[in-house]
Every structure is written in structure tokens, then in C-alpha cells.
Amino acid sequence: MDVYEAVRSRRAVRGFTGRQVPAQTLARVLSGAAWAPSASNLQPWHAYVLTGDPLEDLKKRAGERVTTGDAWDEPEYEQYPTDLQSPYRERRFAFGEQRYSGLGIARGDLEARQRAASANWDCFGAPAALFCYIDRGMGPAQWSDIGMYLQTVMLLLRDEGLHSCAQMAWAKYHRTVAEVLSPPKDLVLFCGMSIGYEDMSATEARTGRAALDETVTFIDGCVRG
Image 1 (cartoon, rainbow, N blue to C red):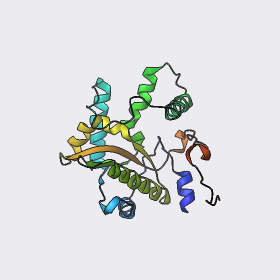
Image 2: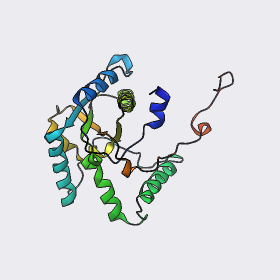
Image 3: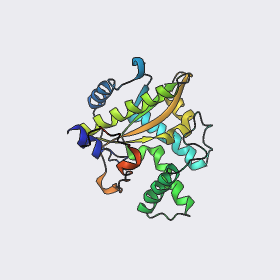
Image 4: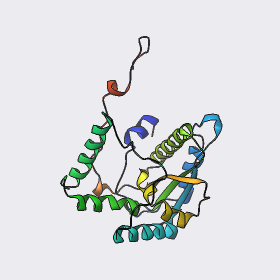
């Protein structure tokens, strides 16, 4: 698979089969992702990979919190600005509308939306999950390094025939994740990532992207492909 195909085919998959992911495949992907760029080569990511019984334990713990209506943990970072401006507000709204309408869930059916969202904490049935942490003392530049690392992981997974779904939702249950992983206290959980083979029967419509001229400005002299 070439790089362009990996980028085009990568998407947030929310339905996986139970087929196990070989440990050597995960090790190969994460060894390759270690070459992701980072400012001054800080490599600020701390990744934990869960499979088998430890992952099932985490899913069970998270599922019990969902079932009992346990409140989310106090946030350790702001996932979205409280006053999200245009055009980002409209893009987020359009994503929600597409996702839930594709599941046959009406806009006002909050209970059904919550049920759909709760699938996050079962990793959408995936047999493997990655949890990415960063040191509390790191700044915005290092958080951007984390994004480049995670994107590299997801693209390499595509080359292995695997799919993924990056999930900030796991940060809402960061204490539960910590119960299983026991990370050092100076680390903050940024996100989880479900990893596995796509369940083709659960495929959802892919979210579109903004037109090129909405996000890119070509200055005279640049060559356009």
C-alpha cells in the first residue's frame, strides 16, 4: 500500500471483528512509528498497548461505570474550546449529524446517542488498544508531536491491513485506565486508540473534508499539482 492510499483509506472505524492482532505486527508498527518527527527529538509520547485479559478487564471496569451512570473524571486538558468558533463549530455539528443519523438516531434522542457513545469504552469490539500519554510539563509543541506520532501509527496500521479509531473519549475515564495501566503520576492520558480488523457489516459513511481552498492558501510561485 502506498502512502497516499494509506492516508485515503485511514478513517475512524467503529466496528471491529474479534480476530486477534499478532503481537509481532503491533511491535513492528510501533517500532516504525518511533521515527515520527518531534521537536529536538524529544519523543514525548508514552504508549501502552493492551490486548487479551488486561484489555477485557479495562472494558469491564469502564462498562460498569457506564452502566451505573458514574460521572466522568475531572478533565486533565480541554478537549474543545468552550466557545468553538466558525467554521469549526459547523464542522463538529455536521459530524455529529452524519454519525448519528447514519445509525438511525434522531437528533433529540439523547439516550440513544449516549448508548452509541458508550461503545467507545468497549473499544468498538477491537481486540487491541493503545493508550497514549504525555508528561504534564510538556507544552503545545510537544502535544503536536503526539499527533504526528499517532498519525504515523494509524498509517502503518493501514499498511498491515488493520484499522483504528483514535478516542479522546478514554480521557473521560482516565482514572479507570490508570487502575489497569499504573502509569507514573506525572503522565496525562491524551487518548486511547482501538486497533483491529474492520467488521465490514458495521461500516459507517466516511466523514467528508473541507474543500482545499478552505484550509490552504497558495502564495504566487507555488506549484499546484
